[in-house]
Length: 298
Figure 1 (tube, rainbow, N blue to C red):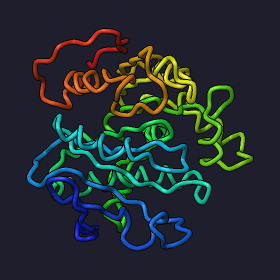
Figure 2 (cartoon, rainbow, N blue to C red):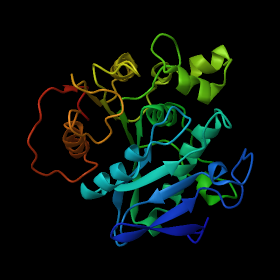
Figure 3 (cartoon, rainbow, N blue to C red):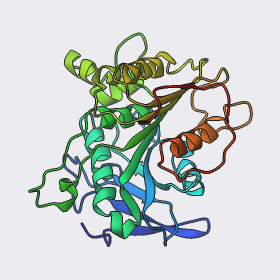
């Protein structure tokens, strides 16, 4: 897929590229409106080489995409040396699983396939998600697949496994009592198949191929209970996969990058975790307290 398959959008100091993930109609498309076209917005300025990169999946209960969990997050990633891409994935109730997962997988494959043109390292492609976007990021982290070396489409030759993931107040479980009911309905429909509920309760899908993960989830989240992240962290620990879990007391749902009266500390912790994982070049950084670490990287 050529990088010419894009449009330019002006944002602040420079133009950003918006890429269609498929040339022509996306698989399973039910129309040709903007909502039917999954895209990847590159907020980075031109000129980077071999950067780590991250696909950002905004939340919105699989029914919308929260603006404050998209471009501002990608812009912060840029500031710490990670190329940020914002994924616009298809949504319910028009679309259901596995469409959203296919959009996220395609985004990872797209970045890897175009790594030289984009100036990113194909072995340092991460995914980050908030709320329902965290469920999508954890789905790709636990249900990914290798590329098809014989695929005609060069993008499909790439693996869809992220090299690392960041999950912020994620929906993890599709099961009561800890799921988020609207996210489940938008993803799986009003009367979901029990097998789909089981398969997409992602703590139970963690395996040795699940990537190292940073999690942040407020203990006072009344929308998506903290048990979602606790279950995922426990599963990672059981498989001896490196993780870091931060559970702030003041972390009401939807705090995004932080703001007055909400949690601010997670971004510094995440940056340090990326350094510890050697995703970013190590630099001096003060250690922030109140975090719980999983196994150290080998």
